[in-house]
Length: 239
Image (cartoon, rainbow, N blue to C red; front, side, top):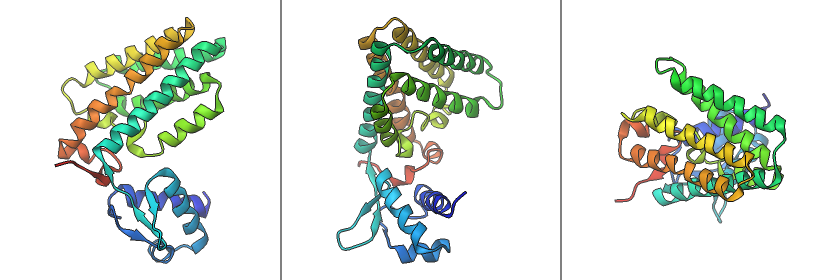
C-alpha cells in the first residue's frame, strides 16, 4: 500500500471515528505531526477527503471537518437512490447481456441462501458483501460510465452507501422481515430489467433506497445503533 493511500485511510478513520471533531480546523503541518508522514501525502489526503465531502476548505487556509444535518444525510441517500434508479432504467432500456443477467441472478441466489440461514454466524458480513456486489452489478448493467462515476461520488460519504445501515437494521426485531423485503425489491428490479420495463425498474430502485432512510431514523434515535455506523459522530441532530 502506498504512503499516500495509507495517509488517506488514516485521516479518514480519524474523522469517521470522531477523533477529529466536526468544525475542527486542520492544517498540513498538524496532520504531518499527528500521522508522522511527509507533507506531500498529507496534502493529497486533504484534497481527496474534501472531494469526498468529509472536509471543507477554509478561505483563510487549511481545512475543517464537516458536520452534517439529518437533512443532509437524507438528501445523500435520496441522491444515491435517484442515480441507482437511473442506472436501472438505462439497464432496462439498453438491454443487459445474458452474461450480466446470469451474474446478477447468481448474486440473488447467494443472497437468498444467506437470508434463509437464520443462524449463520457470518450472515451480516456476507449480506453486506453480496449487497454491495448486487448494487455494483446493477450499475455495470447500465452501460454508463457517467452514471457510474456520479454514483461513486454519491456514496463517498460512508452513511450514503447501500449497506451503511445494515448493522443498525440487524438490531431491529423485524430485521429478517426487512431483509426479505429488500431482497424482493432486488428480485423485482432484475425482473423489470429483463422485461425492458425501464420506468418500473427505476421506481423500484428508488423505493429500495428508502430502507436506508428508515434505518437512519432508527440509528439517530438509539445510542447503541449510532455507534455502529461510521461517521455518525459527524451528524448533528436536530433539536
